[in-house]
Image 1 (cartoon, rainbow, N blue to C red):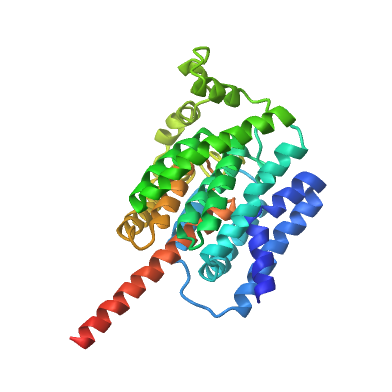
Image 2: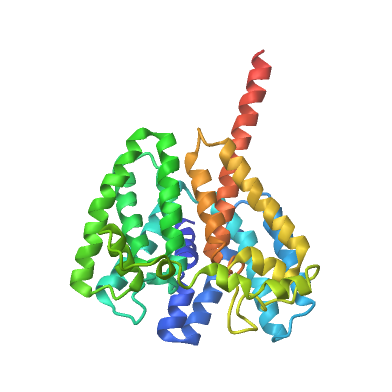
Length: 372
């Protein structure tokens, strides 16, 4: 079972189907995509069955069904996406339940290291690096989510390794969202232990490493030049340059379309780039834009519940609120919650960890009542 488990985790968390598609073409990409679904079916068939994830099932059902009302693409393509996603949610939730914090850390660490491999071994025209994830903003999510996980580890050595690797690799994505959340998580970590202030010292070493990589391979990226200018207090960098290509400008192009059909949306694929050439780059806006207000509100309730529950368990498991913040904020800059399986997997993993802590506390209360 462990071999099946690790192969399936690799397919899901390391984005191997997309890598196959990008590197070897549609045939290999499709084969790995179906292999992912097949491995999930096998894993689910062999694993002990437990309660399914009704939250995600209901949200996804509403999103796909309402979105289908005005869908203008190929029906077979839509049906395949629908079937594959529900197989993933059912099988993937069992996989998430049986994935430990350490195992999750290792797979995200491997994914993050692929960013460094790309930066040192390959050149691109964008000056931003994504490794296995192909998109730099998505790679930034992998790094910040992995960074959150380290606060759930017992080994101080692994924590230090994770802090260094996830921060450095995250900076190589040149994702502004990554930097904002990184600062926020480190401020939260001071509440866990004042010793975590050391990361701001380690940041100097990390930035020095980034400068070294720039000298070796040449990080041809305007954002890196802006970062160096900010550190050196160079007045050449203006606020307009830093905020260039803002996500808010992208979102604004879709607001009118949302207001035109707020009840049932504009149809599956209209906000995620499947029908139009450009996506909204925001999962919340994508849901309301494609399927209307009902799945949107339910999804907000789901995310709010994760936030509230993880906040309540801060003392016992501070990493959960960090992971929830990482996911919630990155969904503001990405519209692929239902297509990038590792994002749904990340949400389900947090959800189950909260469920486990709730159960432990209920059992403890019951034991106290019996003893009394």
